[in-house]
Amino acid sequence: MNGLLKKSLTAIALLLACASGRADVVDSLLRAFERQADLGAANRLMRVYSDEQLCDPISFSADTPKDSLRRLVWYWTGEYYYAQQRYQDAVRQAQRALPLLQAGNNRDEEADCLNLLAICYIRLSNYNEAATYAKLCYQLDKQSGDNDRMSSSLNTLAGIYMSANQPKEAEQYITKALSLTDETKNPQRKAVLLGMAAEIYNALGDHRRALKYADDACNLELKLGREAHAKVRMAQKASVLIGLHRYREAQQLLQQVIPAFREQGNQQSLGICCNKMGMTLLAMQRPDEALPYYREAAQIFRQLHDTYNELHAQKGIYESLWTTCPDSARLELERFNALKDSLYNHTTAESLARFKAEFETDELRSEREAERQQKHRAIMAGLAATLLLLLLAAVIWYAMHRRNRRQNLINQQLSADIMELREKYKQLQIHYDNALVTQSEAEGESSGVTAADREFIEQAVNIVNEQINAGVADATSLADRLNMSPYQLRQRLTAITGETPQSFIQTIRMRRARHLLDHNHELTISQIATLCGYNDTPNFTRAFKRSFGLTPSQYQEKQGI
Image (cartoon, rainbow, N blue to C red; front, top):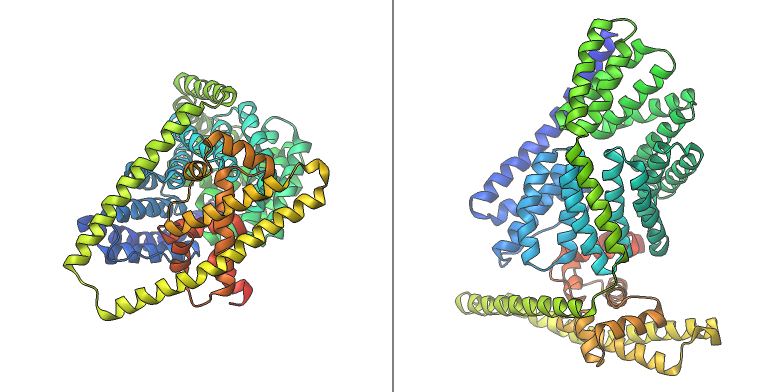
């Protein structure tokens, strides 16, 4: 048995050594960047992150403002450290990026950073901090009207309450999240939520329902071709099988996924599965075989500072030792009790109860139209001031550093391309209008879509396209151009199209992006992002992937472009 434990610990050490080599490179580049916001170090950091996450390369130009450079580098290195399961380092980077993201008035990026902090604090078993950031994230996502983002932040809240051993409270969050994702038709998000639902209902003792959620999640991941994610869903299914006392089946599933997690270097999932394997073997009256798995899990979670899962491993250790080595078991029980006292204390329970009450109150509170309008005006005023400062900086920079003839020719060519493409955008508007008309006719008289409604939609589409060209497309400006309040615009647009103003604008942006990718192969992804009203390529890439399930580069490859 000691030999098995030794082999397991050796495997962990090798995996950590490989990850450490990559992390050393990131740490070194980050130190170089910190010295003077070095552009070269920033771009090398982004290449490492892109290679790790298999996403489109991210790069910065020489005229990128220092604050923009810092906020993006700090945020993306936070994401990198989270992927490497270095949660304390991820928290440190995200907390540095957050004030700059808040000052930049980019609510989606701010919400992503808040969500990253919440998830990291869950892993660190600090549920007070996790709930604080998760609630702020949900509030921003709710203001955006984006159901997909709301379902994501609700899933995070559900995870907090599950980790705090309060599955009944977690149920309300996952129920609402599932209802929202049914509307967004995002299969990747649906698979994650189904997996969380399986864990929640398993904890509530509704094992049959949990098993259905786990099977649906696993089948959906396999259908999407996401093999690594399917292994996580299989591990969640194994938990349900343990709850149903189907230990042989649970053992077989865990024997499939544990080697995969070792190979991937996914320590978090590996530790969780070792705990589950220990639980399975203990239930089968095989404590000697269970003990090495529990010890391996305890070591992993101690290194990750994950008190919640270390607690479960520690419980398994003393239970495995109880019949054969009572004295050793008592020592392990003392450690278990110490961990339990630090994790589940009175302050944590009070804080989570307060967050639950605040959430329920927020859900019942009606919209305050005047406050929303004031907030939107303040955001627009701040954005206008920021754009003015950036424009002034660009003029000064241009006066001091004249562009060479080649750059001027490139700019002139791009301007000509934009003028040519504007004519093509008219066809995009006509297609969108015709689609609405066709849909209205198919639904018949009961749909309520009139000629006036179609004229209103055509006018709105034209205004949004003009605003995108000018780089200022937003719901408040659209309402002003239509001589309506934001509330009136939301009511009428939702009644006709079923979309919020923000979703309506996003749909037009994404249709324009897909049109450009299909018909203008000479344009780069960065140029298409600019033509669709995005200031930076990463933000455009994330928005495109949320809409179509692929990055722009992946879309081009799929279309054979």
